[in-house]
Image (tube, rainbow over all chains, first blue to last red; front, side):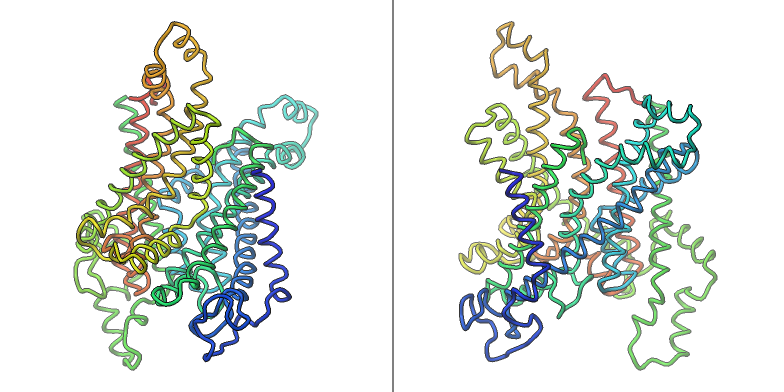
Length: 266
Length: 305
C-alpha cells in the first residue's frame, strides 16, 4: 500500500512537472483582470483564478516543475558533495575526518531551515541561489551517514583482502567501499528530497527564495494570505499539491529504506 | 563523569565560537549593509560618514576582533532599524518564543507518546492504523500550509479564534497546534518503533512469564527501556522547534524570536540577525548537551567518556 501510494503520488508529481506546458489549458503568467479571484470551475478555470486572473491550475502544474527541479538539483548536489566528503573523511581518518566533523557540528548547531534561510538572504534571491543555499545547509547529513558507513565497511574482510593484494587506496575506495555505501546514500537522498521541497516552499513563503510572479508553491501560498477572506482556493490547492508531493516522496523513501537499509536512522 | 562534563563543555564552547565566526563571515560576505539601509538619494559623503561611525571602514580582522570582544559580553551592537541594543531586542522577544515552544512540546508529548505506546501495544488494531495514517500525513503537511488552513476554518469561517498576535489563551491555540503537528508525528512514530523493539526482548517475555500484570510490564519494563531513543529525538526536536518557530511565528504574527529573525533578515538589520542567530544556536547547542547528559542518567549502561 505504502509502496504503491508513494510511487503513484511521485509519478503524478513527475507527470505534472514534465507535462506542465501540455497539460495546462492556460499560460501561468497571463493576467486577466476581469476574471480575477474566480472560484474553482468558473469560466474554464479548473481550480479558479488568483488576484490577477491567472489560472491556478496552470500555476500549480508549473510550480510542480519548479519544486521538483529544485529538489532534484539540491539532492544531487548534496549527495555528490556530502557523499564524497564523507567517503574521504571515513577513509582518511586523520585530520580530514576531524575537520569535517567539527564543521558538521557547527552546522548542526543551527536549525536547518534557519540556516538555509539565512544563507539565502545573504547570497541573494533567485533559482540558482535557493539551490545553493539549500545545498550548503543540507550536505552535512550525507557526510555524517556516509562517513559512519565507510568506517564500518572498510573493516570488512573483502576490503582487507583487496588491500593485501596491493590495490591502490583510490581504487579500493571507488571499487569496494563506494558500492557498499551507495544504498545509504540513495536512502538518505530519497528522504531528504521531500524536506528540500518543503524547505524551499517555506523559504519562498517567508519572502526569500523564489519571487513572484514565478509560480512557486511557497510564494503562491504567501500571496494567498492577503485573500484568505475571499479566496480559500488560493491557499488550499498549492498547499495540497505540496503536501501530496511531500507525502509521496516520503512514502517512497520509507519503502526504499525498508527494502535497502532497514537499520538506517535519518 | 565530571571529566566527561568538562570535555563536553569545552566542545560546546568550541562549537559556539566557530558558529559565531561562521555567522560573522556569512553576514560580512553579503556586501554593504549601509547602502541598503540608506535612502536612495543619499550623498556618497554621508554614506562614508555613516560607515565610518559604524566601523565598517576598518580592516576585516579589526572588525572581527571587535565583534568577538562584544559578543563575549553579549553586545552585538545596536539594531540599525530600532536604534536599540540588538541582544536586548532578542531577549525581549525570547519569552514569547519560549511560551510557544513550551506549549507545543507539552502538546507533542501529551499526545504523541501515549499514541505511540498505545499503537505499539495494540499493534495492527484500529487505533494503530488511524495513528499510522495521521502521523504519515502529519509529517508530510508543511506547517505554514496547516497554519493557513486553520486560519481559514477557525478564524474566517467559524470566527472562533483570532488570526494572529499575542494575547489570551485563544491566541495560543493555533500556533501551538501548527508548531506541534510535525514533531508530534515524528515523536509518535519513533515511540511506536522504540516500544515495539523493546516488546520483542527476552526480559519482557520473562516478565510476562512470571505473571506480571500487563500494566506493570508496559509501565515499568517497556517504557523505561524505550525511553532512550525517545529522549534523544526529543532533544533534537526541541532544537528544531526553534527552527519551526521561525515559520509559525511569521504566519500568526507572534512577536517572538523567529519573527524577529525573519524581519531582521528582510530589513538587512545585521546586528539583530547576528544576535538572534547566535542566540538560537546557543540554545540549540545547550539543549543537545543536556540531552547527552540525560542519557547517562536514563541508561546506566551508557558510559560517558
